[in-house]
Amino acid sequence: MIIIRTKADLRRLTEGWRRAGETIGVVPTMGALHAGHLSLVEAACAATDRVIVTLFVNPRQFNNPADLAKYPRTEESDGEKLKPYGADILYVPDGAQMYPEGFATTVSVTGVSDGLCGAARPGHFDGVATVVTKLLLQTDADQAFFGEKDYQQLQVVRRLAEDLDLKTRIIGCPTIREGDGLAMSSRNLRLDGNARAVAPVVREALSRAADSICDGIPIAIVLQDTRARLTDAGLGEIDYLELRGDPDLAILSTADRPARIFVAAWLDGVRLIDNIPVPVTSPQARHLETAG
Ligand code: AMP
Image 1 (cartoon, rainbow, N blue to C red):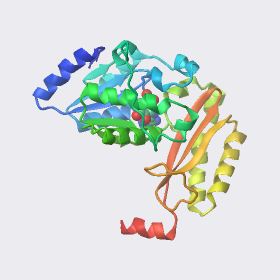
Image 2 (cartoon, rainbow, N blue to C red):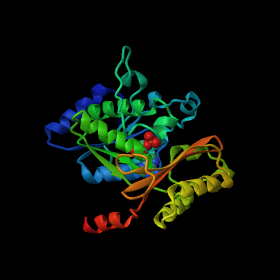
Image 3 (cartoon, rainbow, N blue to C red):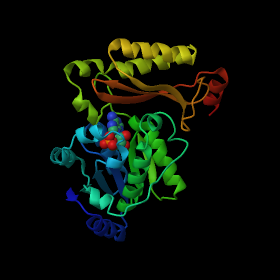
Image 4 (cartoon, protein in one colour):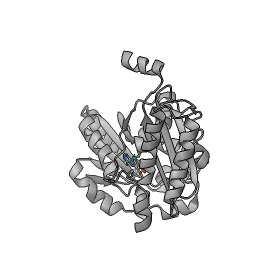
């Protein structure tokens, strides 16, 4: 695996691969790699001839300067972690490569960007959509791999790829979790011992909520109980806890079609997000599921 830092060097390599008739996969990341990222790299290596992992801590998707400043930067160990996986390139552009002087374009996706992290982090998805569009074009990728851990982001990327007629196929990959259920995240590194012990309650609470919804308990009551469970366990502010339709992310008050439950909550100054699917429950929908 070689490290490439400029668009021009990247282009030279991808053009060579194209001449040889090879397919290209890309895994966009902000580094501090963990098994969640590596699962995407594995999926990419299985699907395409050549794989580019990108590492860019994108300032445009941070609405909070302190969060950007604290974001872990571990390029050297990221390179080491990638070695066994067979990626061809680690692409590490700097700010000037991505946003040269005079840069004035924003990609903005409406609809699926509204609410959830879009409401809690103003400007976040414009930053994500802009950088992902650039990375898909720069890498000339046939397929791009994203985690369901950031499910709203996955839908935003699917939308922009379709709307902008990009050739890249967007592939969603399952959330990888720690043994105790906590969704892996680069931000988990910032949890101290006590907070780390509390953090698995996020997934536990979501699982219980999904079970309760399946048992027919009204959504409003389930969400209220789940909030109480999280705050009783020591979570701080809850940015959102919502049931949304899948894949359009419309707000749902009944689970009569495919849905997911989404949460973002603060623990010890760290924002944790997670989401899980909620099986369809209404008799009519159950009929549709078995028929389909
Ligand atoms: P990030 O470095 O946080 O921007 O994440 C880069 C990619 O890795 C995104 O597509 C994330 O959704 C994905 N990702 C992050 N955490 C996980 C996880 N625990 N399981 C699967 N994918 C993940």
